[in-house]
Length: 538
Image (cartoon, rainbow, N blue to C red; front, side, top):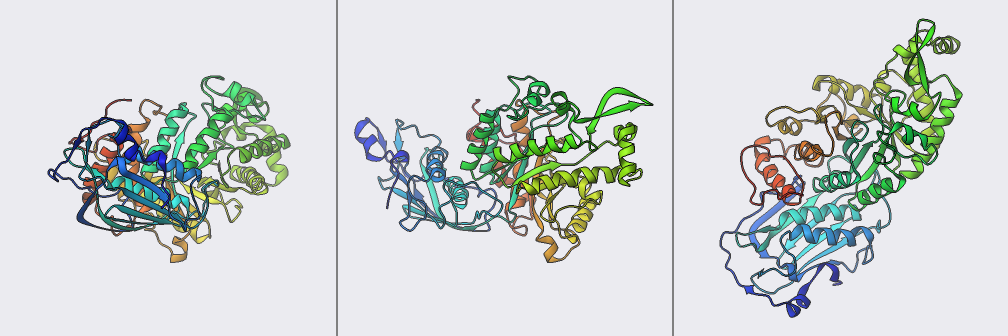
């Protein structure tokens, strides 16, 4: 078997360092509470095998389509060595039973090594752990990355610090193809290093989509090559509070190695106040009686220049972000400014819209969705676009964000009956906080519990956890997000019947939260208790 020297220190270190070898007996053994999110099928026994960090090897199987040099898996091996052996530094006192190697062999069917994950990427994998070896088989490198995460959670330590793994068989795949986290980087600027850390934590919970709500009313931090004034005049600060093209590439590259898609959102025609600072004549002038008030409203949908600007900006965005999806927003449009503007009212009469401002918004959104279609991109829009009875391309994805369970279930029924694909976010707005264990509410969501046929339910492609930024920045993002978002992660990945008990989930989530803490993620506690390895600071 071919092995990777980068992640195996082996006898070289033994022969070059003066090490004290302690042979210990299997006393004070611990087992893992389980894997989070729970695999589809998971069997393990009490038979345990020692795993020695000095004799641990990742390798590619001979039949694997990916081999050494595969950027995704080579990087994953290095990352996961440190995650599997968090205490090992290469010069510690070694504790192991016997100097036997442990091999983990990876076989993938397709060489996706230099590509990006996409909407149809398989994340299915099979993991088999036995004495001295593990076999990880997947259709794609993205499935292999998910399997490595699972393996890393199976390895545990006894009271003496020795590492073990139990005999295990796992067949696993996600219940939903789209499992996202939304970060809002307009209401507060989130530094790149915090975004990267969030991507790491997402991968630990097997999320696979980063929905980057990059701009909004308060600020425009995206630095456009085509329209540099947008961030120069619309960001909180034109130098320190922006995402350069290099920053964006760095986020996309980091996400790719974790098998995470990056979907940008440029929400319009509302939520665009910051856009107007750097793009004259884009926003609608508001009127007080017969005179302009000096205030501006949504994007002006009556001017040809608006659509020329949007086509140029979206073309740039489509080249910068490789994913086939782009989020176009379309929510919460305040019509009062349009109503006040005589030019807008005259345009509506000319177009036969009468006084229906929903028809005016429909006119605008249909133009924007046509632009994205010409760019060969799939549009995601917030549910408002559907609710206003707009003409929507059939491949558009509708995003539900409003209402109580009864309301969003009705919306799921209506949208899927119309043959549209749907994303559910309404029950997972975790920027809303309350005292106590609110993660239980996120865990108990049943995404397919609505009135509809089996074919309708296939149109629900997944869900999303949203972290809006009114009260969130780099100081509190991580503990507010984790481990609460992980409750939704299991709901979106795992079999619903096997994970129907929130009380049975509790000890596993507690254990997983401690794993996050040990990995440097400032995940907040679920309830009274402790972690064996408490958070040690940055």
